[in-house]
Length: 279
Image (cartoon, rainbow, N blue to C red; front, side, top):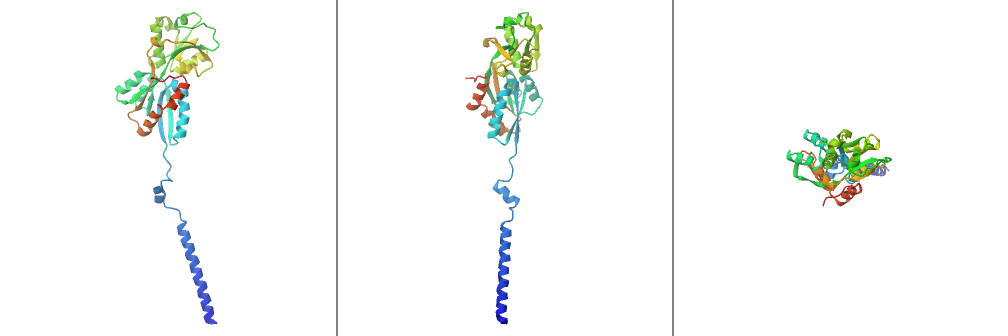
């Protein structure tokens, strides 16, 4: 009896030791992986978001906002920050060291200036789009305006244009009026806007009886109507070059977006907003 009981007790003790051992193994195997192991798998570190700053002509606002949505969906680690304004003002900001990765100008001269100053490499820029200049009047206007000459009528009190020194659309308008021998005659009627969108607003609100904007801007508003298209032979071609800023801290991402802007699907977006694609 004593021997039998001893054997039973011995067996029970062995079973308990075996269970404890199994539990210990399970505990070890279910322990979380160390950070080193997780990193080697490459799945735990979130990808850092890169912010690209795009300095772009104000007339590109609507098209770029649509492009931004599609690009960020396809590139979740990239955030596009747009700085819209007059091309001349944007050029000056870049010259003064303002952060920017991509520049899209509404005039070749602003891009050329930055290339000459080695702020954009000649190989990192190209002509992307083209626009056309139009004269607009308020949608409800009864003024008969079908040419530059009609702007001299007494019923047209104010004509809005962009500041010629900094707003390309204003530069082109001045060229066209000068070539029509009307600049001096109309100068007293002129109201100048800081960019083409402000010119559009002046006409929308009736603060100007007419104005010169890009066709793309006119098409965004139902508060204005196009009075006439300005003869393209009377002003410098309204080209839109795009370039990569030489000092970008995100060269790879900037190059990717630069290439993306030239893809057929993106050029179709620009065309939808009234831009033409240079051949």
